[in-house]
Amino acid sequence: MKSTLQAVIAGVGLATLLAAAGASHAETNWQSHHPWRTQVNHRLANQNHRINREYRQGEISRGQARDLHAEDRGIRAEERYDASRNGSHLTAAEHRRINRQENGVSGQIGH
Image (cartoon, rainbow, N blue to C red; front, side):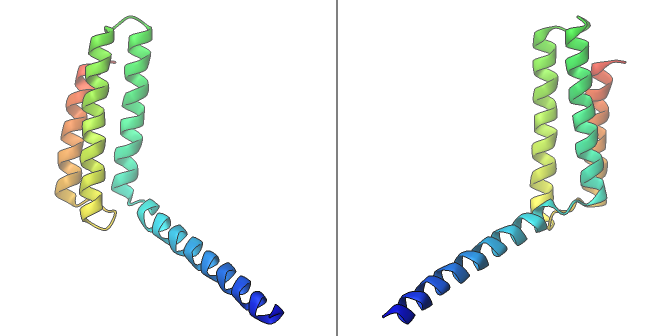
């Protein structure tokens, strides 16, 4: 009886360990960043800071800041969708399209 209980406990422990390793592996695959994804996401973060700074300084209104943040969220959603279809990577065409969209938002933010 005691060895059966130990075997069950060991089996549950092993199953838990394997499940955790599988979940960790899945996260790692999604989080392995393609250089274009990293560049896009850093640029979106930078634009987010610029929008907030200009709003705090009174250069843009609350509504303008809200609209610019919404545009950036849309671009980020597109980036994630594109990457989800390509094994966590962006194609060259997707990268160019996202950069053009970011250029448009950047031009609206100012300097």
